[in-house]
Image (tube, each protein chain N blue to C red):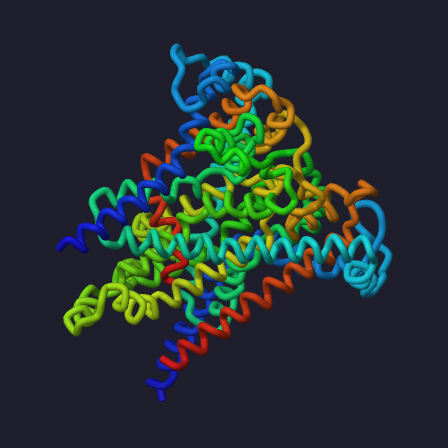
Length: 319
Length: 275
């Protein structure tokens, strides 16, 4: 009898001790949670809510239901600008996936051979990723300057004068050229991811295949490439998230309106004009419509990331 | 044997050509920022002696870059300190407290890695206004802290979970409180992970254009990047000055990167490869 009372007392104090610890954990979590909720989670959620309102000024107050979305998808001016920006963003993303992520894989495979000086080469390849997009954009604008820029001077010097185009002034080229500048800046990131991935693959695996008579080309595609797929997935999803809200490079190289003639306008610049700077011809910010644009971008991200999660989960389950 | 040599040559050729493509623009920016304008157009690829720092001087004085640098350093240092402080406290709690609730909170933080904070800009702007912080560099700090917390929680929680648990248990037996353990056991041990978090957040915070562009109008509150963006329009035709402004904004990060490139690369790729 006496023993069981002592036992329950001990359990009671253990319980109190556990409760006290939990309380302390909560106190430790509180400051981070407060800031994260107040300045990130709630604003994202509230932007969703704002997309159902209209009105001038900082806080739109007139409830309009789905009107902003209907306008965005059907009213001639909004619709054209929106789908133009959406299409351009798709092109921007496609160029990154094709050029940046392929070049990144190539560089990683070459660096992984451990050639002399690979440390220095790696440092150089990654360097532009540390610089501000704005600086990179301005710098390339000077380099691509039709009269004085180095690119056209170089083309003229090697006798290819007919290719010395005003790259950023030409609607068919501007988006491609700006995308390539962005690729130039960020290619170091996938390179480093792939390199880290490649270095975790044990050498014995490919050695064994080589002994069995596989060429190094075959050994790469049959053995290393499949093992790299998870990293390729991460690179793809990071590229996707980065590109859906890309803004700085366009702002620096083509202005907030995606010159020439909106041919480089992305969802990020479209959102900026709608919500903050005011869309041409009425230079008044439209917060409700801006929130609708942000919500659509959020949904695009959600779909993309879900597809990625679904694909990686399924592969994990199979393994 | 011959084939092997050919592949080595090709490897070098590809990597060196790309390195030149990377270095060339940065090199031209730097050497032309210390030249008179007419020399830039006459011979853009060769340094011109004697060097002239007129561009830097004009831009520094005209643009109040002393203020811009002070603002950028202030915002970056305070934001990073808060990210590390709040992030490590939260990570310690999440690593120790194992329950459904803590898992839910952890996932809630991690979700922030995939969602750009920019999409909430409209509401953040309203909050900043209601707090009376418009047109002040201080307004940037809570935004950057919120933006940096997901990666801090992600990296630090994983790191603390990997620490040997007897270290913490021994401290408990000695009667140390949680705050004491956090301060004198956890903090010294997680230094390498803290370095990763610092590097991960330093670049996006220092280089951010979006929030200063939207929140800040007053000249004395500009950050370096915002200052450069406004000067670029002003000096359209004076390339010496433009290049001096660009170089000035780029050099601090460039030097830091070249001094610690290993940590930078490790820091910026650490999270994604593990996840």
